[in-house]
Length: 271
Image (cartoon, rainbow, N blue to C red; front, side):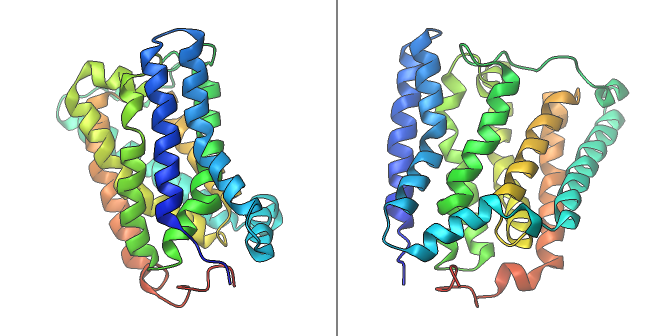
């Protein structure tokens, strides 16, 4: 039986990602900044792939391939459900913001993006790569490595905080979405960290309900990244959005108690 090693995996992810991202900060707005940014971004996926395919576990390797290639086993109802939940969250956030003086124009679609993209990478390329590479890393090995030892609820809490902290250096890398919101206000930066935690519960729900599918997680992550960028919400409204994301996460947990609190899978993820 394969032994997951979450502490080692996440330690390596943080060491490699943050080292590359600190180099990106150091080489501010040069080609080396872009290289550092990209190398940091691909670190979770690279380490997940190396960990899986250098292991002696055929079951682990087979499971990894299944999670990314078996698209015919996806359950569209849960993917579309995730899309609808996030759409409802955004609409509710904007409508509530209007009561406090916000504009209905926030429902409009913006032409470009709220950030430029680091170096040679466009904003669209950045959010697309982020969705794919993060999910290969997190869902390819990271999330399962925690869930092997605890309930999906506890896993979601742990992963949510780890995922939020992982983003920290991005707030100082030129061209990223994160530095844009930090320069607006530290409140918006703090809101980003808070919002990631309840979002972790929603992504876990999509992932597990689709038979632990990386592909489902990639589609959901890409949808969230894109809609967050293309809808003209203000950062103040995104603070309100965090409240609605939290409410959505609570509802999902309460209506899926067996999934989040059962312990039948512990020690048997690969089975």
